[in-house]
Amino acid sequence: MGLQAAPAASTDAPTAAATAGDMLDLLTVGEPLICLTAAGRLSASPSLAKSVGGAEANVAIGLARLGLRTGYVSRVGADPFGDEIVRTLRGEGVDVSRVQRSTARPTGLMVKELRSPHDVRVHYYRQGSAVTELDGIGHAPAARHVHATGSRSRSAPARRRRSASCWRRRARWAPA
Image: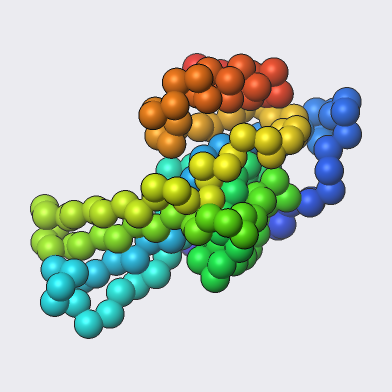
């Protein structure tokens, strides 16, 4: 018996006073990536497999498949990779109504080399990606829990403090 994707979440804007029934179980905040995977060394691979990745995207999809109401806050490029991410998340039942598009910056990219079962090399192409414009996305929906790794905000302490304060006001925090 395989896991089934949850039905697509509503994309309606949340009301100011969300009831328990309106509340998301989990809101994820972060950078979804397109993952290109080479079977072997990248230089010797004739083709790459494409998938959607990123910690928050993986968590949102996994919990949506288990029947929880999940949402994603992010920004991706107005490019084919951004289209793929939004389409995949939506198809898995994740509310993507707060995933915005950037016409100025591209979607982040990760390239994996599966050289052997014990030798996996990962290359990130995230500098200047669309998620760097994440400030100013607006109000987050009510959620029981928030998942954000903070990997993109390590280089900006002031932004990290501002974002953490913003998200604490919008969701109930639970210990990890």
